[in-house]
Image (spheres, rainbow, N blue to C red):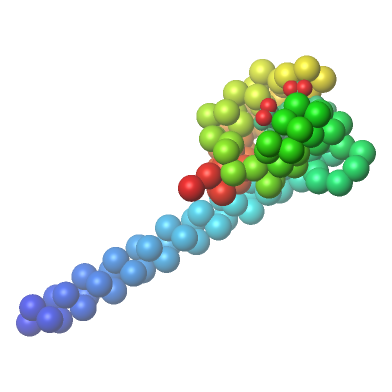
Length: 115
Ligand code: HEC
């Protein structure tokens, strides 16, 4: 095989690996979104009438978005800590409610803008 052919094969392999990584991220994002809609959106969706969004609007006074899905500063570890311990009127979530795998996807989803 010529050097050029080897390069082309390596390049195609790298591209397909990259595509797999993107697809896996996308699946995880969708799982995280589903967990968020089920357990978090009632309190943390944007718009009026959501206690979490109201509380965070009062806490940050516009310095950060009140809706969690719009935040760009949430690290996965921070999300996991709040979900497992709760804060104020926010309950903690048991592993029978949000499993570790679901929490991992949820944390990735909420920190996806943190780059
Ligand atoms: C019963 C309503 C409720 C539910 C359900 C809820 N939260 Fe909360 N959450 C709150 C409130 C209220 C606060 C603000 C507490 C405070 O005053 O600091 C909060 C705070 C947070 C914070 C801290 C943000 C910050 O900057 O201080 C994170 C992260 C968070 N919630 C994530 C979640 C996730 C993820 C879920 C879903 C698994 C969830 N919450 C479900 C009410 C809720």
